[in-house]
Image (cartoon, rainbow, N blue to C red; front, side, top):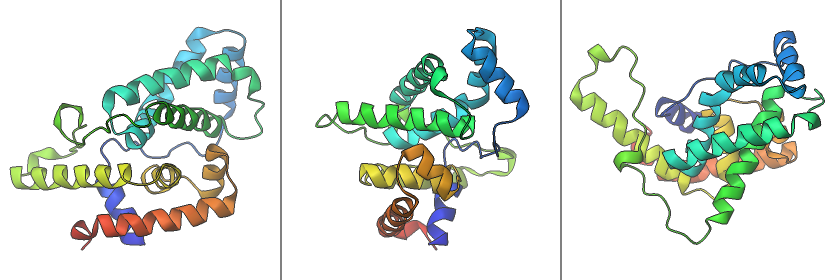
Length: 208
């Protein structure tokens, strides 16, 4: 299934990359200050993680406005719930779990309503580092692939979507995903396997 993971990463719209191996001493200090009501300390944490949470929310919800709303709600919930963070896991793991729960609750609240159609004004443009060498044809190909990936992700059952976004888009380890999603390690692996099978079928034209 390596080609599926590679296709997902290549077509990610706003992948920031996982550069958060654990809760550092400096970050724990920010968390401690935030618990004491230091708004500026929490604002530093917001700036550090807002892009990552947006990418997660967009991939799970498929809508830029909804993603922004969920990021805002996630940070509000995190600030209000900081007393429950005891440092047993990395702070970012705890924060991602808050965001995952917010996204899942949002989708369930909207169950039965019209699904967002990928594309149009809500589609997030691809990052184009070194774009001077990118021709219009290449740009269109990348955009089309990105939209196909998002459609495929949105077509996954909810439980599968969570694990495939956290693993193949965000790049987290199985143990981290289990903590973030609140499920057993074996469940993470089985859901990811099934999700990749479904994505392989959906993305077959783009996997060469």
